[in-house]
Length: 140
Image (cartoon, rainbow, N blue to C red; front, side):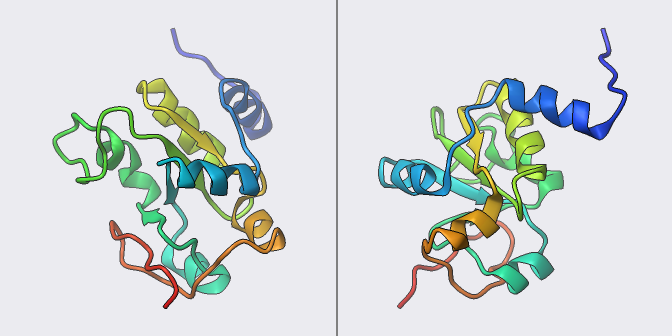
């Protein structure tokens, strides 16, 4: 059965209904416990707003294939049980992307407010853009 929505807002509300969305500070703590932040923003946005050190860059159109451990096109870090925290600019696209990962059975969530909220909390950011499918380097 295909579900249709009257608006993008309804689609977003439905996606978020099945997500455990977290604050930037909670995301930072989850990374310390082994979660990986995945940045789905295009290069121009990552260059403009910076990147989260240690995050992995995956373009949105490849996300499910790169993060599912049995896709055949997965990244080496995409292992069974790996927790993913999706980030975008303001927390809209990341909700849709995280919901897609959850629908595949992956432990995923997104950051409320995206990179803008992360920066506003004073959490670490480095200049980008990092190449796609690479980890953002830690500051030196």
